[in-house]
Image (tube, helix red, strand yellow):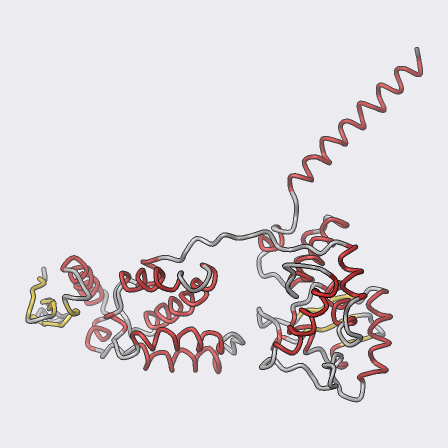
Length: 355
């Protein structure tokens, strides 16, 4: 059985290796770790020695900044995750705080302190997106045997988010929005409302992605959130809009162009944001984001068909539970009970007809 003691300003753990030889290891500074935390780290070391994972104990634990580079390279090159740029931005924030610290010297208490300070500046959802990147970094470090102990972000936990109901565009608002939009914005809005595609999926569409013979749009995997390609049928309204658009922009290869006739760039999202914001202001529509057009399309499809499975495939959701939030069970219950009312009404009417 090993022991933990204080040497100078750091806790040291004493344990036996696989050959029953006593070893000592610095576990962390006392201003970062409590003795209880140090004991937990030592227990994890002893457990890994018993499991034959002692090589990890001998290995040098990297700093956050060093492993951040490995993590981003992994996300970018191996997993081909399109969100690596966001992760890089989030990790840059943490590196400014703890970049020179080893992963094993970042505590859950510091994560808690970060949340407290950051909440004074941004919403809980933003803090959670930042912490999610750091949490996954620790999981990967653990997987690669470069970190031991408990993931400090997982231990601290994410914040509870106040998930507001998505903004759904009414049909009257849709007419007002389209009427007050710039000519180059109108086909973009109609496409989003008739497919439920995400903003960048719409803006990066090329004519090679559209098959008018089969009436299908293919969304390439490199522009989807799930990194999986999917196909969306083209309805009659969208077909007419796209055929007109082809005459205007086929020379570029891209389906939609900015007001200056240039393709939309993922690195310049403000180009659409300004145009969309101006249209909403002219139409007198408040609190509408472009992503709400996807929510609107999803809600309308479910309300009109009730086919959640089909809508889930169209939206590209990995889990049908994500699609379920667009369904309104309360309304379904009301409709179910109203159907019983109709049965009784017909029955009573039939009886009165015999009287």
